[in-house]
Length: 278
Image (tube, rainbow, N blue to C red; front, side):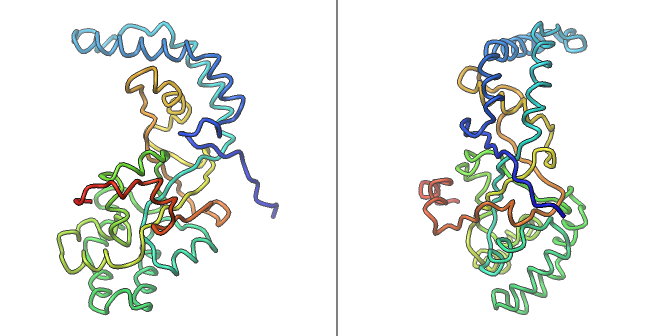
């Protein structure tokens, strides 16, 4: 097999990481991008006040040229990797394993392996181990009863999201991930157990844009929304989003595991200024 190929790595909220050709073309087309978004907002406003227009909204005169630009920039961006931040809580053996072997997509087998590892390391009592292993809540999550969870690894694409405590604090507070803690937070015994295991961590990863997805998957449009964020209020689609991959990540794609004891964790989350509720 050939050597693993390292691609150009971009981070949405750090323009100095964007491909030179992408950024240059965006700067050249800034007036077009702004005019397109202004016209979109004008049309949306018209449709809000005229029900008849909602079925046949006016055409955006900049749309054709804007689509050509998106098509051109997509070709540049699709050859890159994008930085994603995975917020979690890990025990030391899990940190070592991820650094050595990479990250695994969510599966019943992965969760059971984590339960067994925590039990063997006396992080879980026998009673709590059996309770979690047999939990109907966890089983429903892992069989996707409420939403699709398995076979994925989720990330936030924006480092600014890490400072929004209401969005990430639960991921840092409870060990096991959403499939484990969600539904157990009102159980004082299990909840306190999950809060006592491991340490909050941010796993910084580099994933090919061609292998990640979101809703909708307009990466280029989101980069341009960030590009004009100081000129247009709330451009669509928003520059802030979550994304996922449906494959395991190699260890080389895990750039860094940032533990709470690391000053970088404090800087990224600003958790020292979070309210006591979080």
